[in-house]
Image 1: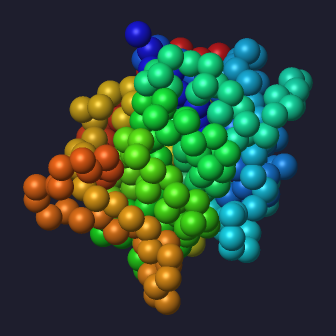
Image 2: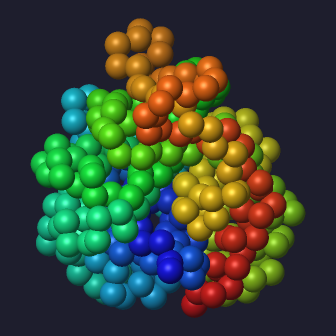
Length: 311
Ligand code: BDR
Ligand code: CA
């Protein structure tokens, strides 16, 4: 049975690749896409999600826009990585379809409450605002969601500050709500995603796929690679968000350990830091886990195969 997921995202180059990986993987049933302000303003990332859905032929998958700002903090975007559009680089198809009229949090609640308990997995790859809002609006979803697998944070590493990762520091209160709930949570953070690098060998592999979706991914990686080189000194860019989707496709890809997890909300130097207690054994009842590594070669094979199945 394919795993049913809602992808909550802020496309974003790597979010776009996460959508395509989900769309092209038979192990995944993509039930909805929801958007949140993050890499760019809500209107831009929502348009990008619609355009990527158009490219992938996801005509029947509802798409809903959610929060346009974090719960508490001032809004912040990442144009230095994703450009002014949030998805600079390729020419994307003009979206022809309409958004679901519901707020993303409401769509998430409706889908979870209408599903078999334990059948739906949430995969957030942007700030966690929508997921936190949904959990507060309808607390019964917490017991009904199978698992939350989010891209964000890091145990030993930051990228937006010395200690914090963008998705978490963009809305740390929302992240604290999500990791503090009793649902199973897996953090796919920078420890793993900094191993999912799109170097020249990967680019060659993906280019050889030859579909329109693979061509768009190549153009996305061209812009994203340049941005990562100039703004963060990476020779090959880390492609974060599809790693969270890949964990749902194949749970053996990532090295994951169970550990208590929390988000720093008060630190002067550590705001948004994800603090995992890796002392062993994890206390009984621990519902949070953190990914520490990924088998990058097998990860890229999944991306390659998905792109080959898409238009
Ligand atoms: C995360 O931040 C965004 O720029 C990416 O889309 C990814 O979700 C990486 O820190
Ligand atoms: Ca993202």
